[in-house]
Every structure is written in structure tokens, then in C-alpha cells.
Image (tube, rainbow, N blue to C red; front, side, top):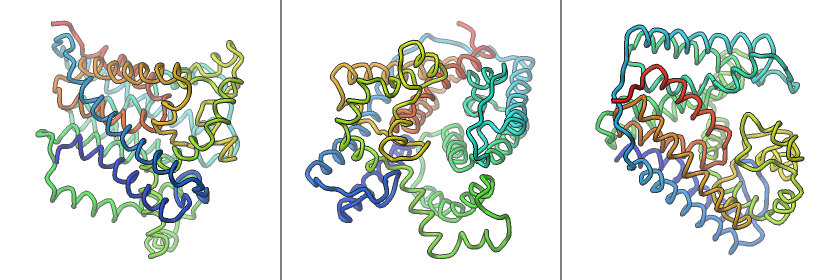
Length: 387
């Protein structure tokens, strides 16, 4: 199986499986809207099939855009530039850890909503430490340096309570970088699945312990491998890769959402980035993103990584649908174009763009688009030179 199809299956299969499960149960049993009843089965089927079609179309859209030829570039890499970049990325990881430790920003064990106003906030806003690491991981060939930065990156994320998502990101980027043929044998897929089943409870224990929700003892750790909790954890993990439930609820409430959009209760999706508050202030919007609005007004909680999916953006006004399609195409092309500056291998470029599209664009996490673009510009400054 090709690596690209393997990545697609990570999201497509859970959407398909849980879509059938929800239909048979008559309610949403996993995801962000547990207990939400399916009243209109015909409408649910349309949403279910429509979203799966959209995911497949996104897959082929990425493959098509990444085949567009970009200007030929040669990598001008020197030992000095490589060393400067290493220290820059390493210091960025350590600095963000210290910043989070001293301020409580982005630390999930901190209960209150931390507000800070200092120059460092803007540095970490425009140069996201996680994104910078992911891009550095793809380019760095010195294994010793890569290991040092990886340790700093993981330590910082574990302290802040973010481990499951970043572990997945590192694993997939590892496959993209080192799977030279671009294909993964089925026997290795089974090995990956086996390792996933073995490690999932441990990762969740680290996740909850680092967030202050679990006591660090051997007894509490072993409880994550009891049959009941083990199956619950696996179900929750698989459910995070589907967004059939969220898409159905959003489309079921589409009239309410459309009214809220017209009344400027959340900023447009293209303003879901580091200038959100400034944009909201200038154009009289409420300072919330679409996903934040869904979490507050429909799911009735203060925050959460709601997955909006693809279909809802094509179900609002015609103008919004066109802007969304243009935004998606330009985002994918920008990643493809800038990645070509730092990585010659077209296979790595295509697979990386596909993964970012599936992981960020598909669920509606648009904040990552400018973060990745800025990260690519930063990394490319150390390598790109026109041929």
C-alpha cells in the first residue's frame, strides 16, 4: 500500500466505521456530541456519504496540486547554516518550555484562562515551536542533532499536556522521511497496528497525568490496561480521526450557524489565525472562531478542538463555498511551493502536504495554514538558493 493511501485510510476508515455505528445506534456515541440523537436518518445518510466523498476529493485535489511544477531550486546547505538552524530550533523549543512554565500559557494542567501581554508571545505566535520542529524534522539529516531537538520538543509537549497528537505527527513524518519507496508493506501495517494497540493506553496515561488528571503511580498506570478502560481508550482514539458526528450536528444546526455568521458571532474561517482578535475588532466580529462558536453555543462548553469537516463549508452560502475552495487550493499550493525550497524529493513534498491537509484542513483547523507557511519561510531562509 502506498504511504499516501495509508494516511488517507487513517481518517477515512474511522469516518466510515463510526458512520455505520452511529446509524445503527440511532445516536452519536463518540466524538464531541455524545448522546446527540439522529432524528432524520435520510439526512444523516446524505451527510455521511457526502463527507466521505469530500475527503476522497480532498485527497485527489492534493495529489493534483502537488504535481504542479515549481521553479527548479538547488539546496545551498553549509555546515555553518545547518548549525545555526539547529541551535535556533533547539533554543526555540527550550524557550517555549520556559515561557509556558513561567506564564502557564498552553499548559493544560492550568485551570484558568491565562492572558499575557509581552513581546515573547508574538514570537511564539508567528514562529510556532511545534510547526518549526515538524519542518526541521523533515530536513535535518544529522541524527545526533535531530535526537537532541526531538527530546527538547517531546519534553516541552509532555509538560504542557500535549502528547498524543504530537506523537502521531512525529510517527507519520518519520514514515514520510525514511520510507524511501513511498510504499509500506502490509506486514508492517499490522506491526504498526499492534504497536498502536500496545502503546495507546500508555500515551493516554501520560496525557492525563501531565494535565493533572491522574496520579502517577504504578496502580493508576496499570488501570489503563484493564479491559473496560482499554476498550474505552481505543474507541476514543479512533473517534478522534472521524468527524462524521460533528459534521452531522453542524449541518443539522446549519440555519442557526448561518444566522450567527450573518450577525458576526464568529470570525470568517480565513481569519482563524494569529490576527483573529485584531480582525474581529476592526470589522465588529465576536472574537471567536467557527470551532469556538460551535463549542460554546452548540456543544455548550468553553473550548475544544471541534472537527468541522469539509461538507459544512460547502453548505453555507455560495460565496462562502467559493472562498473556502480558493482558500484550500491556495493553502495546499503554498505548502507545496515552499516545501520545494527545503526538500528536493517530490515524494516527501507530496506526502507532507497531504498529511498536513488531512490533519489540519479537513477538520477545519485553519489556524495551522499561516503557521506552516511562516515556518516554511523561516526554514527555507537557511537552505534555498535559486539555481
